[in-house]
Structures are given as structure tokens and as C-alpha cells.
Amino acid sequence: MEKNPETVDILAFGAHPDDVEIGAGGLIAKETSLGYKVGIIDLTMGEMGSRGTPEIRAEEAETASRILGAEWRMNLKMPDGGITADNENIMKVTRVIRTYRPKILLAPYWDDRHPDHIRTGQIVTEAHFKAGLRKLEPELKAFRPSIIIYYFLNRIESLSFVVDVSLHYEKKREAIGAHYSQFGEGGLKPLAVLGVKAPLQFIESRDRFYGAQIGVAYGEAFLVRTPVPLDDPMKTWGI
Ligand SMILES: [Zn+2]
Image (cartoon, rainbow, N blue to C red; front, side, top):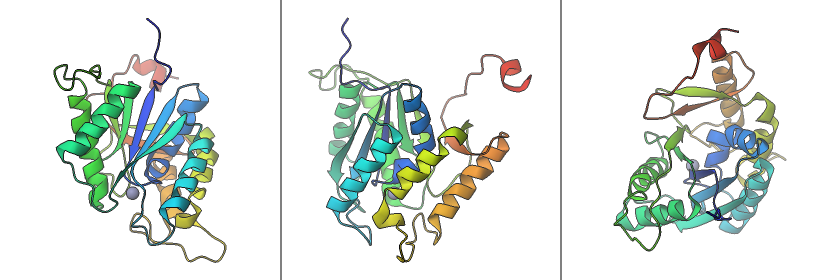
């Protein structure tokens, strides 16, 4: 069967145009460098941000997505600060999942201080389930990705695994830096992002901390709701 040219291997969802960079930028850069196709979907334009306009933020998001090697980036234009996990929004995401048929979904961890992050996690979780229901809107073929991998923004309570992103950390830094209106230097006072006044240091310290947990320079932590299969513990810990 001919493969739909639009399909991607990984679909990464964020509430705001810098979320996926912060939580999973290293993983995305790593997977695209391995040849996997990644699409990025932001639910809002980030228009409630204290700095930057939707147009500026869209340009920054596009630059960041090129740095990470993503195939494309799309915006569903839900209201920033007012995402609701209603049926209309869940179905929008369900259709996107069925169209691009990724094996893995990335979404923000559902327990976070920002309500938009919570709702985005909820919407993707429900859309993942609905995308596999054959009798629901059957004109678009049902498809359920293998797993949702949740990334962290404000809070990490428990995690399932840490991915070594050391070799791709510079790309993560660059991609976050592309969101100049949010993280800009040049005399601009850093904004409180993720509720902290020094967001870049916060993100980097956290990634160093999780890297150290697995004995590498930089790591990103993730959560999945099923046990993580391990083929051979000797391969992981025996060498
Ligand atoms: Zn956000």
C-alpha cells in the first residue's frame, strides 16, 4: 500500500508556541537527526503573552521548528489562556491525528500550573482514544498512535524515563532562543516563563539534573502511562 506522503512519525502538541521546545526540544532534534519525521502543532498563537504579537510569535515558531528539523508546524488557533477541553477541540485534534497518523504523540503533562497546559494534555489524551474509534466520523480513517509521551513544563512529579539529549542540546538552546520575544536578551528584562524569572537557566539546570540521573550531560524527562519495555537489562546496565 502506498504510504500517505503527509504522514509523520511523531506529532508534538503544545499549548503555546514555545512549549514543545522547552519540554521536548532535545528529543525532537534527536529524532529528526535519526531521520524520523516530526510535525509540531501549537494549539494557540500565544497571543496572551506579555510580549510579542501573534505574527512575531508565528515567525519565531517557524524558525524554531526549522532548527529542530521538523517537517512542518501548524497552529490550531484556539484562544490563548482559554483552551477548553470541549468536544469541538477534541475532534479538531482527533482529525489531525487521523490525517498525519503518527506512531508517537507528544503532549504536555496534564498536571501543571498553567491551565492551558493541563487542557492540552487532556485534549490530546482524549483525541488519542477517539482517533481509534471506527464509527466516529468514518470519512476519515480511524487510527490510534501507539503511545502518548508526556513532557514536562512547570512540574515533574513522577517520570517514566529520561532520554539522553546531550548531542542535541545546542539545537534545543537555539530553538528556545528563536523565541526571542519571550526569551530575548539584548537589554530586555527576562520575562517570567514557567513562573520563574530565569527560565533559560531553569530549563537548562533541570535538563542537566535529569541527565546526571542517567550519567549523561543533558537529559529530558518523560512520562508514559504504561510500563516501558526493556529488551535486555544487560544492554542498558551491563556494560
Ligand atoms: Zn506554555
